[in-house]
Length: 559
Image (cartoon, rainbow, N blue to C red):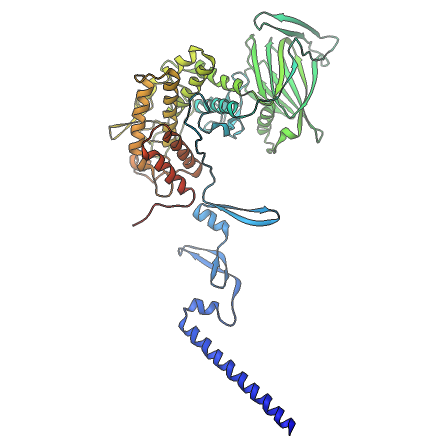
């Protein structure tokens, strides 16, 4: 009897459980019937998860995607290219995360009003000489040689001015460099090794007003005059040299981690640069005169490696040391020292080049052909750039401020002339709707109205006006005011709603727009923030803020 009662209880429980399952099943079927197909499939009893399947992009092509329930995941490699966004996996305290960014450039908000006696915009962050398109730093002039449009190399005035402005700015923002005197002929005397057939004496030089060494070696292989240096970390070497023909100075660099020696030869030659095996040669000219040679030895080594197609190396300054300095031939030398930097020496090298190379019309012609746009004629060698003129003025104004030498101020004033000459006549001036002046970075026909180069020209005009003194009638001030009126009038035309245009070729040529890539867009924003500190017109600060927002993924509103 008890067994029968137990079986009845089990049967009743099973019946109840079965009824409950049937109710739940039909209830779920009812829910499924009311859901969209995609949702029903993703939440069915047999759910799909982490399945690879095909994603069709605009009906044109497919990419491999992954699905997880209702979510579809596209590979970031596709998203990066399709939307031009950027991201990387980073790790903090062992926890990985993915960092997404809409642009790759940085905005620098000015901490104070722009001062032409101070840094030039954000150029303290520029390292012109390390750029791939810089072939080397000339041993004769001490300025960069560009390969931007001509692989053999040429002196590009804009690049040379940027080189000077970067070093001027670094001099104001970096701490005082460490300086190690090797031989000054006075308190610090190096221990020179002189072979039996060589001569070495110390004497006073009237032109330098300092003690120097006089040396002479023979053609014999073992004939030498040299001193051990053995310095690490600092690699900017400076000295005064007076060399006769077929003479040279050689600096020996050694890798501390492996057996590698590099020989940097500075020779009496007009050859720009030559490299063979571990030997790199720089011509420093053939004129018999005192010259102050200032060289960043690591940069000189890297540029020689580039000629040999050697791969770039990271942080070679940590691995090398200056082992020794050798003098060959016949001549005199003095003031030998090694430092962490010599920014003002590099700055004045650029300023002297601008004075020496300025032509009668006040310009610095570009000796390379430049193709700017497919539908306009090439700019032939000898063309001028408003950006070169503006940058050049910024260098010269600062050189005059620091030195007081009138030659720099005269050269800066002469540079204004071409800004008032139309591009068709060899100048750089263009007009928008025959009303608003524009200083053209690339004076094509028809004009392109490049934005960043125009603003850099305005800064050059402002620099000269301030350095000249507060004279409201100055030509530089008038040109600056005219240009600012043009900028504030045309600025809205450069707004894409999600970025900025590099130029206005879509207006003047009737072609596809030339949208500024993010580094140029960031330059536009930085320039506008700077100008907003000089001009209270709200269009400058409002445009800068809106354009900065574009770099964070913001967009102009649509209808």
